[in-house]
Image 1 (cartoon, rainbow, N blue to C red):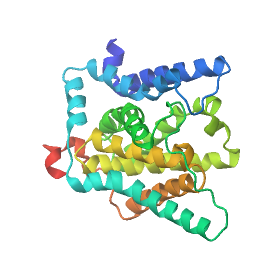
Image 2 (image 1 turned 30 degrees about the vertical axis):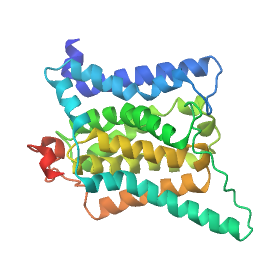
Image 3 (image 1 turned 90 degrees about the horizontal axis):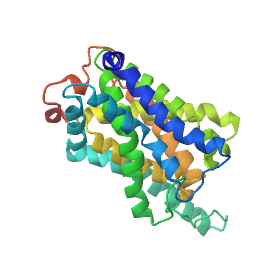
Length: 279
């Protein structure tokens, strides 16, 4: 127990991987695959980072209270516009383009089911979006951004910390390639793009998290919205590809424009006093 208190990052990763990999590898061992439809054991794996963050934070005096504050931190309106507007705008442009293509008789598929997602109950798009924000959004972001990124930025630059988080995040997905229909269908040639997309997403979310004053809420909303428009049955194909490419482009722009500091001279939001005032 003393070792776990002294090494919070190792503790967080140990608990997170134990919960997620334990759930997902149990499905793999039973020979089960996961597609659209309610799969509680798969959903349990999705909240592994949240459980890791709560368990590790509870081992330190004030740690759990600090984590809970990040859940309730409300950023300024412009960061809500980024969290919702960016993925929705990309989705709207793509879907309008699809309709135009179909209008000219090329036969592009326009019947899209945005209420079906791997492991989640079949429902309406709005209800699915709410579930994605709660399970995927809070379940992952409380750990990756709310805990791990915040801790890493105490000794590392925001860019370096985001890349470390991205590596841990990508590795966390590994058992999904054994059980999820969507992951199993990916060609080997696409795996580097998947890894690059995770790293880019980590860079972008680190920027959004810091700019919002350390708000788990706003990155959870972005995460759920992005997953709806890139991972639901209705998003498969061009929309998912364009959403992923857009995140990679955004991350490259942020790094090249030095909007996310790569040196310690840019103090992370989690270290600033009264961070909400800088949102």
